[in-house]
Length: 171
DNA sequence: TGCACGATCTCG
DNA sequence: GAGATCGTGCAT
Image (cartoon, rainbow, N blue to C red; front, top):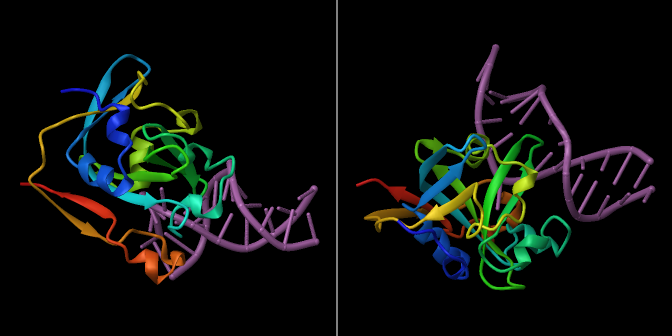
């Protein structure tokens, strides 16, 4: 097992979203214990022209981290109660991210954020350097399937139907 | 300075 | 099928 480095995250979001399936997400808690999860579901958000991507509204304080180099965490609060965990991908000034929708038996991005006890302090956390959350390589998966992304009807037909949701199919 | 809304989940 | 619950962006 090896920790995924920034090289991995510099690829485009669709590639990273697909390759993250089956990889390990490791969370080290404040008491020193850690929990390992298998990533089972992801979604890719691809740049300013992707109407479903938060960066499509332009560069703001909230989306700033999306414009940095791949490998950092982008978290934000949705519906006033759920922290969504995203991984920034791509190169500088190329706003892309992968949303972690499922880990192990936990499905749904809201529940993932709650399980991992995510909060604002994880904004801009570096996944290659952090001691509380990181990703590890794992054996290649056997198969996966794709589906349209969830909860983005407002993005318009061109974007809401993109098959950029990746789901691990267990062997 | 205020206001409507959202990459969701849970409960009835 | 509706409520919980609040930061953000955009309109005053």
